[in-house]
Length: 376
Image 1 (cartoon, rainbow, N blue to C red):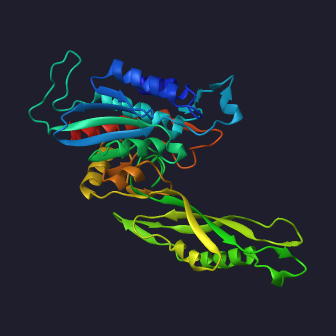
Image 2: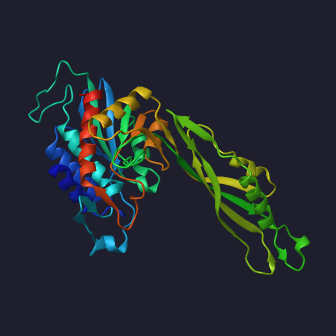
Image 3: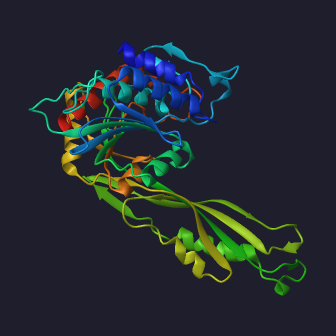
């Protein structure tokens, strides 16, 4: 417990909302000093550690070490403010997600893996253990659309299985850390309507771009968002107009209007927003597309749930999550994913962000238990 808590404190104290370099260097140095893994840091700043046999299936414990900008109360003289009280650690990045990164780092260090090398260059193979590789990975740029994850995947990082250590605590009920088998994605898009300007005293001389945009908005309002079911968890997508901007003056027929659309996607079918482009003078373009995630292997999901049940007194469940994570990018690339971590609903990105220290210890035990089932 002390190791996970102290490592969390050390990680959270390093500012990483503008530049993750210092945090990445710290993680890399700790892994080199404290573990028997093969440690690397790529050009993007992602940090990896590996041990075991690459001939077998690989299991990755995945996090990220960037954070969103801190509130004024969370930073002082350029350094993050940390406070521990009532069994919780408060500060930017405690819940999202340096606490879980610390738990995963300690779990990686302490997990015995068949065929891994000890620090003297020998072997710690156990004949009775299944061959496989245990990987730790911490990405940059998760808060910026999965920059680090996408870079790593393009470079060939596609483990067979992954536990993305984002929040799953208190989802089914208070006091448990659940296993997320599906989450929504987000597609942000812009509808652009163009017309022809004229004096407002002669509206028929122009083409009103706002009217065209309103026609597109009416179409969006009538679209049904798709649903999906993953291991008995039902996810419902959504689509909503969130911004509109058009016109140049009160007495000018507008020749330009833009509409922003927020769409929460589910695995499988998408809302048919491209239909807005069939309206005369209207174009539709995707600005951001964070993929949803669905666990594609029920056996792995059940193994993760068994590990969760073995390491806590409550009754965790297989659940879904409304927020996109790097699990979406990994699943899209072919990795079988679940999400499991210490953050609770409503903790991430808040001015009083915190994490339960006892739940971090629970996650440490859970990650070790799953590693022993998969590659131990």
